[in-house]
Image (cartoon, rainbow, N blue to C red; front, top):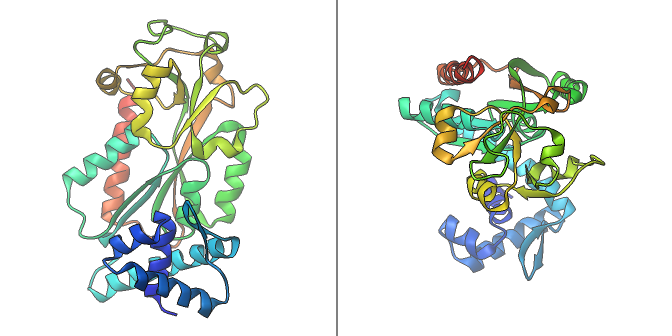
Length: 298
C-alpha cells in the first residue's frame, strides 16, 4: 500500500469510472483496475461496487476515501516544503455560492500569480467549515440564517477555528428581468407563492420546512440565469451589484419577509487557530471587504 494507490482510488471515486480515471492518470485501464484490486486486498475491504453506472464507493470505501484524501493533502504540503516553499504556494478556498465572492477570487487571481495549486470549492451549509477543519482548504466562508446561529457557533467552537463575521444582511429574492414580478418595488411571500424557488442541491437534505412549495434544485451556478429565465422561478441570495444584475438581466426587489431570522443571513470567515494567514490570503480578505462594502453601502 502506498500513497500512489490512494491517488488512484480518489481519482476513481471522483470520476466514477475506471476508464476516465485511467485517462486522467495516463495509465492503462487494466493496470488501474489491478491496482485498485490490490489496494482492496491489502485493506481487506471492498472500496467500490462495480455497477452498470460506474464505480460506486461502499460505506467502508467512503470512510477510506476520506482518510486517503487527508493523507494526500498532507503529502502535498510536505512536497511544498521539500521544494523550498511554504503554505503560500497553494491557494485553497471553500466558499458559498455568491457573485461578490466569486468576483473577489477573480480579482485576486488576476492581480497576482499564485506559485502553486489553486483550488476553489463552492458549497453550502457546513461544507466550507468541514473543508477547513479537515485541512482541504486554508480559508472558508460559511453562510447561515440567524435562526441557525447556535448550531453553527457550536460547530465553529468545537472545530478549533478562528471566526470573523464578514457580513450580515437580509437575503433577497432574485428574478430574471422577464419575470412577471420584475419591476415591482416591493413583493410579499404571497406574491412568490405561484412561482418555483430555485435552491442549490447541497441544501436539499436539510430542507424540511412544512411550507415548502415547488422547488428546482441545481448544483452548477452557471445554470442560474437560464433557469431563472425559462422557469419563471426565483432564488434567495446575497445582494447583487447593479453591474452584475445588468449583465445577467437580474432583478432584486425588496421583500419584507427577508427581515426575519430565517431570511437574515450571516457570512463568517473561518481558518484554523494554529494557522497564520499568508499575505496572499490577507490580500484576498482585503479585496473581499472592498466588494462587500460596495454592496453594503450602495
